[in-house]
Image 1 (cartoon, one colour):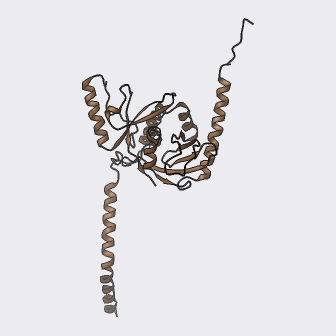
Image 2 (spheres, chains in turn orange, green):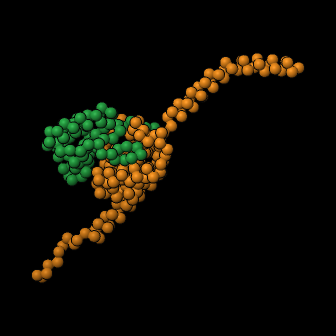
Length: 208
Length: 77
């Protein structure tokens, strides 16, 4: 009885080994490859915070004051589109003004400025494959600056490089709409503040 | 721009000095050969800040303060 069981087990192992061995070898080689890809330097939250701080300083020095304040207060930047008929690959805006919302490490969203209708999402990344600290990912503010420079410098090139999707692929349209509402509220508040702090345009005539 | 670091100063110099200009040109080429994009932050005639993408050192305005190199864009998911 025992001999029969052992013989059966041996046959089963022999039959399975043909199927299992290549898989085991593949799993082992994947494991080894993963270990080789593992960063030489461990993740350091302090280093990442310092990197983000440098990136924020650089971003602030490049973008308009309004854009910096927008990013600081709302977490995204709006960039106006410059193509006559909207971004490439869309159905066209009929000449209506459109803009992009730039989020860190998220898709760029194109929308119609007047109606807030979302046009499309442009998924784009700026990976640094040299991975100096084990990651190809730029600090958040550097990612925003890269998008801002590429959009303001050569909108068509960036948009044609990106993968275009319908709205809702990566970002929740309701969330984006809410961000657009927040942006309009923020702009109103800034205009109110500017009007309050502006010197009177009709100086008092002391001579009577 | 570098992951885990942010801004890194690569080279600096005065383009009016031929020695500096040569060094800056070589460094510019080296960065582009490494696959990076280059942009010069500036201002449009209306006074709004923008960036100019440059593909050769000759495209860099002579009065530019700096050139920023960043990884080239790739279609994301």
